[in-house]
Image (cartoon, rainbow, N blue to C red; front, side, top):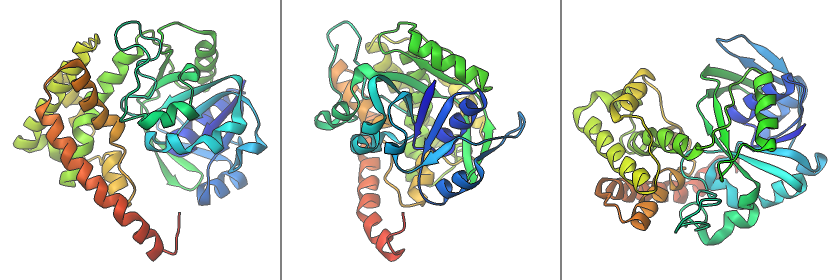
Length: 336
């Protein structure tokens, strides 16, 4: 099995190292100091489950790799539309795209019988720009429950969780899913093939949709948000509205708001990825997490007043970030 990891950051390099350990032919696509370290010394994983090292091929040029069986996408959802030049050399007739992203994916209504079948979600596929680069029929969904970070270039610290659930948009248990899942398990990870992956998407989204934008707007950790009575109440209301949208679209999550809150509290003084991006001056990955749900609520005729207000505030914050980013890059000498 030949796999390319496009965007071999914290999660991508972790998955690539596990697949390499399982005996797959793995190619990591990265850049900068992280790429240089992986070229020189491979990937070192520090984990409470046991440290290990792997030496997959690493490059910044996908043309060196050629067509693969699977592309594992470690990019953020807001980078998908511009990924065409990187993806093109990796795609053969049967290449799958395993999209490890937070929030609502661009393929959400692909393979779903009913009134919304094939409908494009503008927030995550503006003007069809993502579908033009990533054909929905190539997509395998992926919900990541593992937490990792780049401790230093070439070194991944695994914090908790080893589960990455995958699934076909049409709910079938396909040979391509089974092949990839078997390799992940052989590499030491959990990778269930879920016939109802959309349920996993909404369960994880319940936390992301509330904590990610609030953490950026309030510059607060997850534990701090839970401790504060007013923001805790805001989280509950955002989760409730999110569940209303999921139910209207035919998805029953079977997870209570109290359970999701308890899970968030256990993470402690953790900064969400959105807050981390804000502190680094990076664009905020909130279209798939928040704006898409507001769009789906309108489609399903569900009232989500709280989500709308938070989305408006977060969108304004993101506009300030994206406006300031070019100036920040210039001040730093254009560093990427």
